[in-house]
Image (cartoon, rainbow, N blue to C red):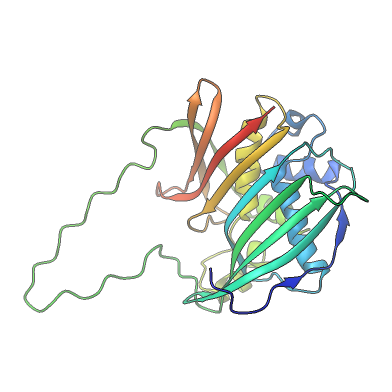
Length: 274
């Protein structure tokens, strides 16, 4: 990513993942919160990074998640105070708007060495830039040329096992994301101003679903995972989850699909210690 501007340090943000809030968010995402046994969902730690942006006086309205990486060396209990130290590493101009990369170091109070790092890449969308379609229209064929036959799409579930389905609703998406902010998740008019037919589910809401499935095998003590958000998942759509194993019960990757069987997010797990 090219740096279009100097790196900017965000204001340090002391915070915690409140147990009551985690219970609300897990329920909205169809996850049993007791699976975490008092440990914080990594996706909700990611949400505290978003809150660090707003606490620094920067707006996240219209910010659309593209990619994240979670690196945690130890578990984070709910309600335990930690400090988010964030910085904007760089920006890149794209046809859909400025794309930013932010890095958040997570520290226990009074300690210099971080216990975790969250990378976030996102698009600050411009009005009308986010189209409902997934791909740009192909260029027109030369005069007299026969149209090419469409290439068959690869099955996005090949090699994966079904992990269940979950129906999103506007109320669920709103209750999951409103405390973080970003009107693209709960304001229909704002979403439509960006070319979206309706608000979209927060990317970390999909991560809460995925990490919640992983946590059913026991809370996560150490984690290195990357998630890529491929296309919007609207707040009234059904999402299906698919997983692939390294060995029985050892999940290494997940895919979330919309009703058209197109990938909305992909999660790859490199390190997982329970």
